[in-house]
Length: 488
Image (cartoon, rainbow, N blue to C red; front, side, top):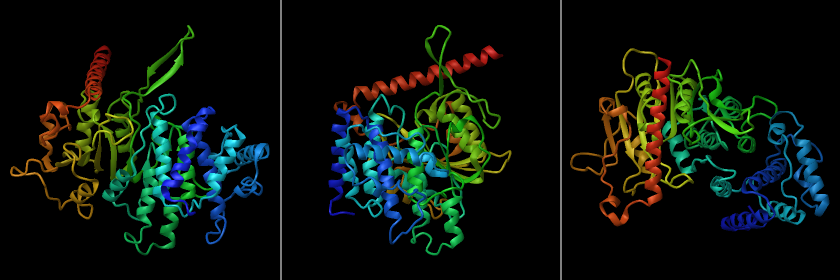
């Protein structure tokens, strides 16, 4: 890296936001262009010693062909490079397909190029690059015009989930809504860490590179960002199998089965199709996925993803899935899915996440850890361990990982007891949840100290959001019941 400090490069990247916004460039467009240019710069660095990697960038289309240009010459060359790379076969063609320059102000384009040129991006820590990207992703997610509904998983949570599942060389890993590839990169980092696996064979290294990861991403810009991320981290072959496919993962069974699934499905209650009616008006229609491998049909995206994940897993495959609170308590299809999950899988752990861990205030989520089991008439889930990382939070994810005990999850010890009612780690027999109304998993036992003081009640907008969410869940259940009655 250059002499610039970490805060300095982040400050420079952020410093470009305002002039770009003034020039009509959105956060999403800036992120996209920044990604294209960093990709070209990193490819240039990888092509030189000590890496000497074959990057697939054709002659005349590299970073060195444009970084010294200015004005109209720079604009023209950048456009030419994007166009040429979009016509390449394999991953490069996918990444740059229909790529265009969104920074039409030549002076600003030059400043962005020079800012990127001064840094050594390959040697820059992933945390620094992650901080740059996540900051822009957060701004984009807060931009109601372009980022609504996208919540990117914080890296500390991703790493904790990976450490709990402890991927092994030879495992295959799926993420059916892989975003920018965070779970894949953290898994690769874990597998190639000498502290975890000090002597990988050549075959194991090749398997990690070419055969470990299976992803799907619906949003075109995010799909490209993911492919770039993986390519620059040496995942995937230039002209081999594409590790990520673009499309709606819920439409059909992809046919492959993996030993691990780690994912954070997109938040939002319903899937829908937008169409124009005969009067020329725009309407939305709930999108219901009628799949034979699902336990129940409905338009709730999270419930559909949970069923899809069950399909993707091999027998004895393991999953860690981020899901919003409504999946834990809503009735109708939600109750059906929860009961089936307990019957056919071993749901062994629930992590209750703090409010606001994602970019949208008030979003409440959990991580469900479960293993798919062979077909059996017996209930596969015997007990569920719950970690409350939400109430009166004074813990950290390190404490959760210790309690999870990845080395042997069958050797766990509760921190909760009658003498310690504020213990965060508690075991419940499965019957405890089966006897609850709607088989609700939404349970907590630690007294919220903030609620003991009326002056410290949650903000009215948070309370209102909770009320609206509960009402929407109730209406959804009534609608599904009404639809079932009409069919009968």
